[in-house]
Image (cartoon, rainbow, N blue to C red; front, side, top):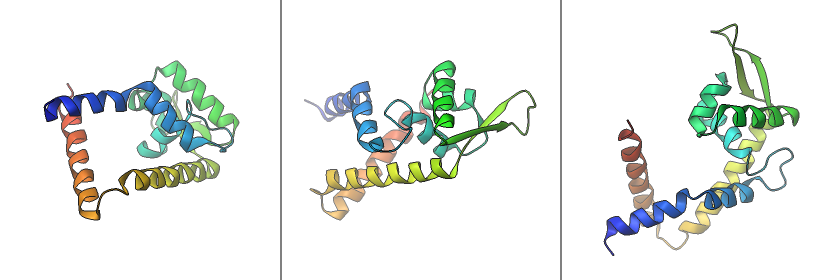
Length: 147
């Protein structure tokens, strides 16, 4: 099998819903109000920064706006997010992380770092660095080819 086919197969498996959901479940266990379904919204907001609308957040995380709104509502209910008036549009609502939401993001990121450290443990530091560089290049290439 060619390297291209191997990469395509691995990328296909990585992008499968059950792969993502399994990873998200392992990151969110024991964090009140956060689970595999709401994690992408919390994580997406952490990447985008406070003050985005639900519509912007939905687009960034690849979920329907109504699904994102439900997840935002659940996260607000658990004190992880808050809604506030949007500064640029009086009709819009902005979403932001609370202190508890920031703590949840830090906890999940620490878990992800540990998980990745375990996965990369079989590589020497130079190989792990090269893998990270190649992966960044693949992601950048895929993102730049979007139209």
